[in-house]
Image (cartoon, rainbow, N blue to C red; front, top):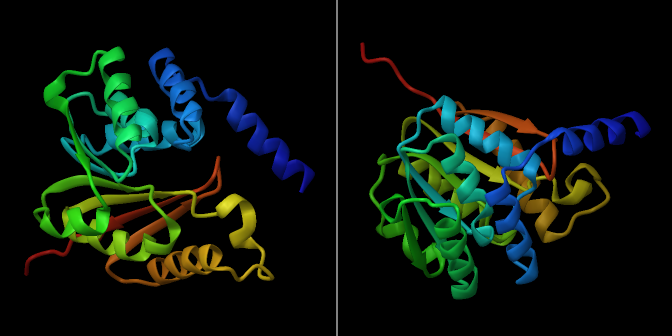
Length: 213
């Protein structure tokens, strides 16, 4: 366990966060927006870059931190970010202005994801990030898999719930929701899944592309 914690600490200390994102993080923490860690941010930036993402949906703004990481990796992408808290969206909007993100690259939607997602076009996005309440995570991931194109990616941070998911004794609603999500997606033939334990954890799901015969 000691070695494992040392690896986590090394990964956290080795991750360099761009200044604009670091400032956004400070503002997000001030309002209690709970942004993703820098380690997870760097991972989603790499995924956005590797997939050459052009259209991204984010459920939960985190005060703009995760969105800035995504656009750091895919600067040509357009980001749609959804949050039920107007203050979180306002802080994110200012963070994007401070980072000189063109206004055409970001769309901010105030509302509950359960109300907004059903109205969005399916198979139209390269990446969907689900950073929302755990009690609705399975529903949101189902929407995310519907929204991404063939071969698109759904990213879910915080799936380890601070390590509680790995403890079989803990059977609360949060731990149960994330365990179910991880087990169901790992055994599903419709997606390829990988679980990263860096930071607060990141579940990565890519829809399987089928060949036309």
